[in-house]
Image (cartoon, rainbow, N blue to C red; front, side):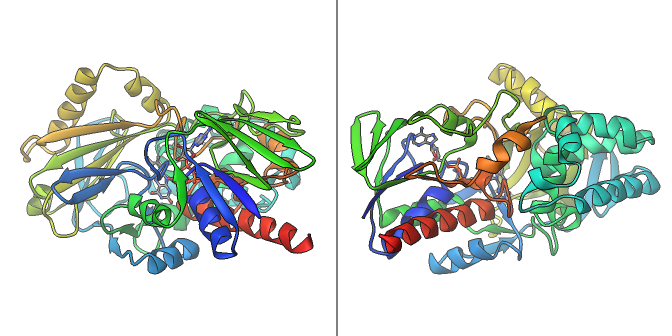
Amino acid sequence: MSVVVVGAGLAGLTAASALVARGVEVTVLEARDRVGGRTYGLEVAPGLWADAGAAYLGHRHTELIALLAGLDLKTTPTAMDGDSRFELGGDVETRAGRFPPLSAVALGELFDALTDLCAKIRVDAPWLTPDAAALDGRTAADWAAEHLRHPDARRFFPLFLGEMMAADPAAVSVLHMAFYLSSGGGLRYLNAFAGGAQEDRIDGGAHQVCERLAAGLDVRLGEPVRAIHQDAGGVTVVSASGQVRADAVVVAVPPALAAAIDFRPGLAVPRARSATAPGCAVKVHLIYPRPVWREYGLSGWTVNATGPLLSTVDDSPPDGGAGVLTGFVTGAEAHRFAALPAAEQRERVLAQAARLFPELPAPERVHVTDWLGEEYSRGCYAALFGPGDWGVLGPGLTSPHGRVHWAGTETSTEFFGLMEGAIRSGHRAAKAIAETQEEQ
Ligand SMILES: Cc1cc2nc3c(=O)[nH]c(=O)nc-3n(C[C@H](O)[C@H](O)[C@H](O)COP(=O)(O)OP(=O)(O)OC[C@H]3O[C@@H](n4cnc5c(N)ncnc54)[C@H](O)[C@@H]3O)c2cc1C
């Protein structure tokens, strides 16, 4: 049996590896000149890497953890010792721990309301949630306007949603917000460092996972797939430099990019709609000679209502050979920031760093990774399902289209949007193809 896998991200390469292990002949076609997709390494000092794409994982990401063990990769805890800084509308404040200087009652009410909402969702099939149409028809911004009374809750909510899912509340349906938070393990798990989804990073960078997976596979780079045509005998996959014939295909690319492929016969259910928005995150790395903030008892963690960096976290390599503060620009702020010329982006980042950390020297370098501008990602962390999307896209999310199977983190109802979801989707697609092979 022969299979073409479209996309050499975690989902595509997991599917490819699993199929090769079952004796299937696999060709992977990748649009970029590198593998890894939304995992991407940034060399911050000779031999020292930071994650310009996905970074964090927690103990519930069991398939990722198993994959790391198989590839001989280790994890390192995300550093979070020391005081945090907050710029939430007034002066910069320093506090022990991560809790922001906002009303604890207001934030408690926000989390209770979100928890109640999440409890209603059918995570395995959100479109079958009781009252799905109503939840799918309204945005998270509508929900906030109706449910959040206290100004602190209103101020914190977009920052929280930006950090959790790189979403502008106006761009996602209530159903998608609640699904995403539940799929990722719930509010507390998703939001936590110790014991949660941000507990660890991959030592040396997450990009190594795909590089190591690809090493044993037939991966062809620089081959954006433009068309997938099926006939009675098989599938023809048309890419930049030619075409490949196979018995089946796994399409493992983000929904908007899958929707741009010319399928013949055409798809019964679309992969994306005009309401489907790109996740909006720009990652900014501030590079110092060493983690200098630690010398002042600071964790490097900040939360800010005044952008551009809405949060920062210490992502320094474990040996301390470089200091790396990762800044997240998310939600509506990401669109504004991405539109600025590079010199102005740098100027604003340096001004904010000086406000947040007046005791520190200026970073030696600032590196901006704009995922909104990436032609073959179209945003991150993951696609955002807008009003009406789940009702239309949900039922076809994983259903094969003839010989075409679907993978990618956006096709996983478990850990949707995360590396773990991508890996689970790759295993699912490979299993489905193996089952059709056994039936023949
Ligand atoms: C800044 C950022 C931060 C993140 N943080 C985290 C985190 O901390 N933890 C976490 O678990 N996840 C995080 N994520 C999400 C995580 O990166 C993704 O969920 C995961 O990597 C998606 O894998 P995938 O294989 O589904 O898709 P992708 O990685 O997008 O892979 C798809 C591949 O398909 C290729 N492609 C696209 N179109 C075509 C085409 N037409 N033909 C051929 N190839 C094509 C792309 O180039 C790409 O290589 C983050 C992502 C980003 C960008």
